[in-house]
Image (cartoon, rainbow, N blue to C red; front, side, top):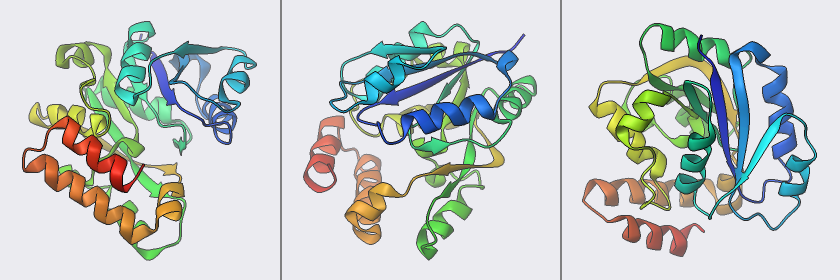
Length: 230
């Protein structure tokens, strides 16, 4: 029987994490969820205290870095399907059933289409484009489901990447022709765009994508991210 281990990397998410965990439990069937694993990367706000007080949530502690955090969560997972989810992204009702349906069709990895919580025309357009299978429309905010067997075959997330780790895994999946987009919307926060400015942040995201395409190293990408976004 298929079961899903939900893995959420967390760093200073006190404003979001309880709402997300409540949302997950309200919008999925208990029989399909093996566990919810939150992996903290060294939060300095109330995030750890909030999660610690919630029943049926497994809290792990890791070195900072989403790749490290998600790999640690995957090691602890007991389900045969891994579902990696950002702390500010809220999957659709019955997300568990949609994921299992794809696994049963031998679609062993994929994501949901995305909807930013913003009415800005560009973010609405970017959201609309995520329904298509184009590689350039992918990102970690859309969440990532993958069979545990395929995840281990690939070698998990590449911990050499402090950023862009989601895209590295997605590239591996596209190379294997093992990726499907579920035509249901995951709602994700536009907080980084609001903080930095939509055009400024989008320019830097495009710059990182192009730098990687031109052969930039993981360290080069992280230096650029730290200089312009962090």
